[in-house]
Figure (cartoon, rainbow over the protein chains, first blue to last red):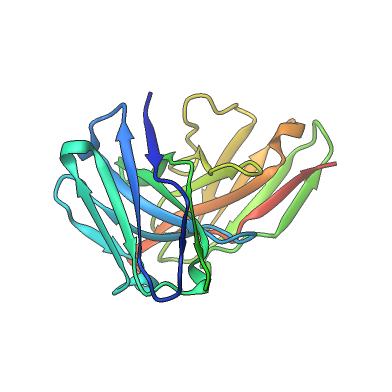
Length: 121
Length: 110
């Protein structure tokens, strides 16, 4: 079945970087976008950016420009999200999602289970 | 902060109809399709409605979506206890050149 399997929880110190992976299975990895969405405890959903796994093209939310990098390894159908200069406010669950564009509609139809990133000194 | 506005909470008794509004602007809902996501407690969000009013396979027809101008709404008819969850609207925003989520609405079944 179609699924996105994310890497395990991370604990980082302020100022460090974190790299979260997202392995796709059950579909052709290069045929759909990968988005990253985060959610702090008790808060709403926040979109971070997208990547086209075929071309490697990316688009980042303005808030994260300069701090986030989305990459992929097509040989193992895996996407990565690296966030640098971590601060306590980056403590959240990070989700990867599959993005689809059909008939002028863009939506995220498959979600990973999430990776908890804790930033603490 | 979110550019799509939803009420923080909504509630109803089993069997009732609940409607959740989502207010946006010309750069998001006004010019792009709206999606809705359901997040059950302690789980990842799940696509509930896409392209304003389309239900993915497996989503009960109790859930329906609509859009008019710069607003959208999600309706849950025949409310059930398992519908207790957070619901988020979302759309692409042409001005921000990014995807935006609503503030989220917690639905409680009384």
